Length: 314
Image 1 (spheres, rainbow, N blue to C red):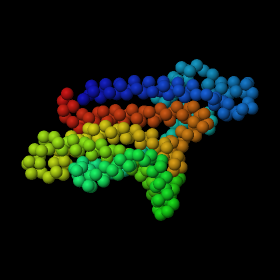
Image 2 (cartoon, one colour):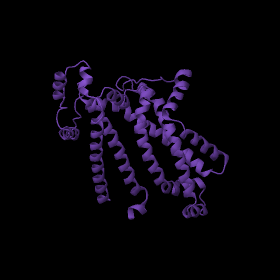
Image 3 (cartoon, one colour):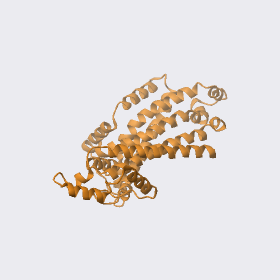
Image 4 (cartoon, rainbow, N blue to C red):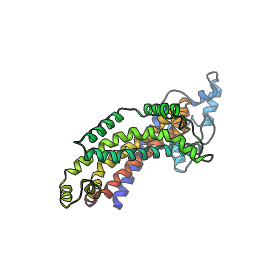
C-alpha cells in the first residue's frame, strides 16, 4: 500500500505542475492589460509602462510563473493588482462560504441517493422502483441554477421560510449562516443526488445477481439483510467512482450557485476577478479548484483498495 500511495502522490504532483503551467499560459494570453484596467483608457504610455513595472508585468513569463508557484508553495498567493490586498486571506474568507456549501450539497446528495437508489434497485420491477427511476431521470435534466430559482420561488418567496439570498457571517449568527446555506445546498444536492441515484440503483441490481447474494438468501437472510451485510460493500466501487465525479461537479457547480443566491464565496470572487482582469486572483482561484478536483480523484482511487480486498491483493 505504501508504494502505491507514493506512486499516486507522484502522479498528483506531476498533474498539479502541468495544470499550473496550463493555467498560467491560458490566463496570461487573454487580451487586455491589468495596468490599463487600473489607470483607464486615458492613461499615457509612460504611466502604463511605470505601472507595469511596479506590478512586475514587464518581467519574462517564466520568471512570473516561478514567482507565482513559489509563492503558493510558501502560502503567499500574491497581492491583487486591482484591490491591492493579499489574495490568500481573501480566499480563506470566501472558503468559509464555499466549503460548507460543497460539503452540504454532498451530504444532501448522499442522503437522497443511497436510500432511494437502493430501494429502486431492490424494487426495480415494481411500481415504486419505476417511480423513483422516473423521478431521478427528471432530476438529472434539471440544471442546478434552475433548481435554485425554483427553490427560491417556493421556499423564500411564497412560503417565506428562508432568505432568498445573501449570507450571515458565522461569527455573527451560526444558525443564520446555516439558514442562508439551506437552499443552495438543496439546489446542489438534489440535482447531483438524482444522478447518483441512478448509479446506486444499477449497482444494487448488479450485485443482487451475484452468486454470493443468492447464497446469503439461501441461508435465510432477507433481501435487505443480505444487501446490508454483503451487497453494499461490493456495490460501493462504481458508486464511489461516480461520487468522486459528483464531488468535482459540486465544487465547480458551487461557483454558479453562489451567484444565483448572492453568496460571498469563491464563485463571486472569481467572477469579479475575471471582469476586472485581476490575473493574480484568477490564477489562484482556478489553481485552487483544480487542486481540489485532483485531490478528490486521488482519494477515490485509493479508496478502491480499502473497499475491495481483491484489488488490494492484486
